[in-house]
Image (tube, rainbow, N blue to C red; front, side, top):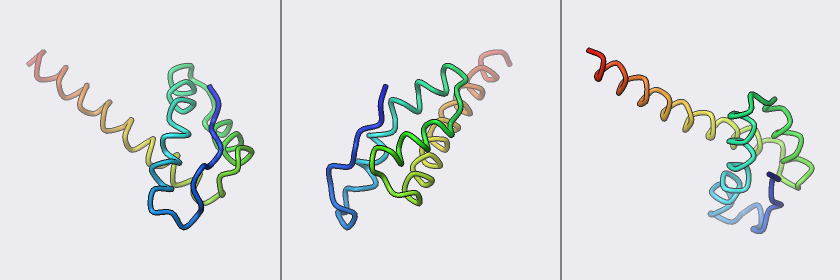
Length: 81
């Protein structure tokens, strides 16, 4: 998977959503293969995203993944209770 280049200008209100969508597939690929998330950072910068927005994007993706994992753990605990 590759990180797609920005298609909207920096001041576009949809830029953050576009960023997360551009990075998501590569993020999932790296997480599921125990890859280095710094690869995602460098690939995103190379694709044309700004450093600050890449950092925020990775943070958003990690938060989303953490929420999913927490829900899975809670569901397992409720099932085993």
